[in-house]
Length: 390
Image (tube, rainbow, N blue to C red; front, top):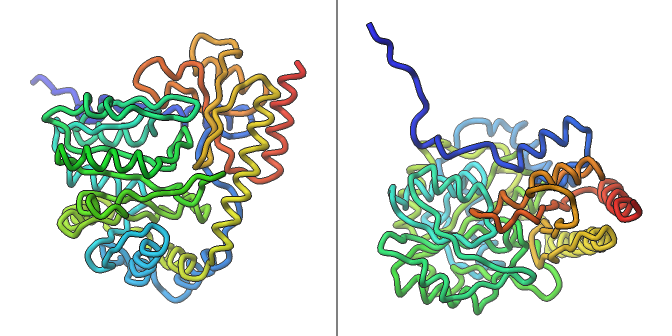
């Protein structure tokens, strides 16, 4: 009898280990400074920590409702109205999931069919692309260009085909730090209405905006509120990337299928950790968020100054906590070789620029994550400036 050979499904064929994880592994092996992975290792605010600990002590350790505990959905709803200018009903419009990544996957599963196309701005975040591919849809790229990461509206229109189903926005953006302006969002809104497209917007870095930048949520524009899926969470804001608590806000006709998929895939976000996030939202005041903004802007400026001293031109981000830098002066045939050479020279792990482009446009770029404590930043800056002295 001929035995059939086991093999993985076609869906996994295009999925590979991300450059971010690869560089993190190499960094750990070398005992370097990991500025590759977007891990914020700053201390937790007391209300967040206490909320989770109290919930465990009080026995909140069972499944929750698939869309999140009431106190958290209510807190998100009130925060959305005050900060994002989004009107939403906590009983109808909010789905809490296993991180922003989890709710993005659920949304893609619920709203996209195999063969559908999604407009994605480039440079992109790799997990967005992999998730779109995992559900059988296809990313279609629209380039944004340094140093200010502008795009041409005509390029969006040209990229739209009858198969196009959605436009994906990441603001503030990983890896470029682009903060979409109101004018840019209004242009995208007009296109989405004209071509009957969803707008899926990842706003996980919404509190990390610098200089005169302003975070604008597309769903705050009334004309596109019903077609916008707003995705966010507190992994970055509260430094709890391992807790996996994220959410989406959308019209109830989209929340229902997204919620069903979320229930199927994740069941619910971790119960006691939902309580911790809710307590953080309810008790931390505006000073907490202002301090985040100011502290990270200072760190950004310090790292950019050291990069300039090292002869590595940074494209100064207006949001998020990443810096794309030009490393054309570093030896190497491509961005991975340049990133590895930089790791050998400085002990700093970065992400090769190829991770953020579908073509060779990123081969002279690397990404630095600056969500690190003061001692780590000082060490990294000293290492970079040492590269210049060599």
